[in-house]
Picture 1: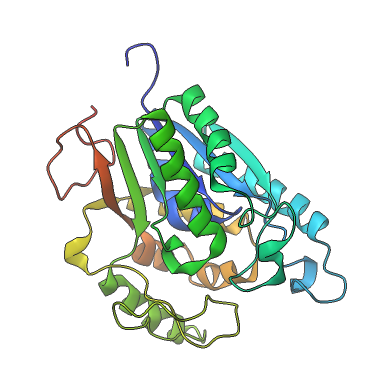
Picture 2 (picture 1 turned 90 degrees about the horizontal axis):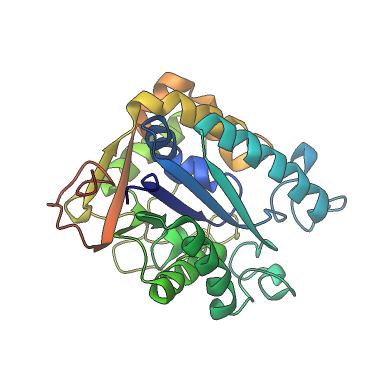
Length: 287
């Protein structure tokens, strides 16, 4: 421990996920002198092209989109003070049920063991104390998010590293408020399905059902106050402005955005420190 800094590794699926889900903790812990390592698994090629051109539409160039999104990702990391960015480079699999799911080189079609071995190499290099990724449903059922969970947990099993492991989540109380604000700004929003009903499609899939997302507040183990870094998170998200799903957040302005997004929440799924729950610090028990 003495010969290296405390290290946080966040494993995300696409460029922009780091800002949406963990921009606050990445910014906060970087400012506290903790080494922050971001692993982005896909190239984001199924994102929107210039002018909002959607995948499958004439003129959508996945390679050009991937190049654009890499530049945006690097800008986001600079805003958040991320120490190290690692790109696994798999092709974006698109939403569940898209033809891109099974395309050669897509993240979803890559054997878990193969991708986990690559991630394990990065874990051995950086020796993370804390690892953060998605839950087993990828938070909302996106195949690349699900795959990120699978390879992260497999890599942790291979290496035996990380004293603390977390999955990102959202409190149901916040999801309700989030829906109210979305409707206030004129965005379409459907309430998440009742608990246990996760048969709905992912956003952008054309299926009007919404998967069960988030957790009851009492099931969340870790509430990290990142209010001081709300502006950083907003600016990191703004770096990904080519993606239409981010435009809604940017409409709010920094003050309203921070009010809604100033606490990041997690479920602790592994701990060797004995830190008491609930906790307000991913590094509780480590410093």
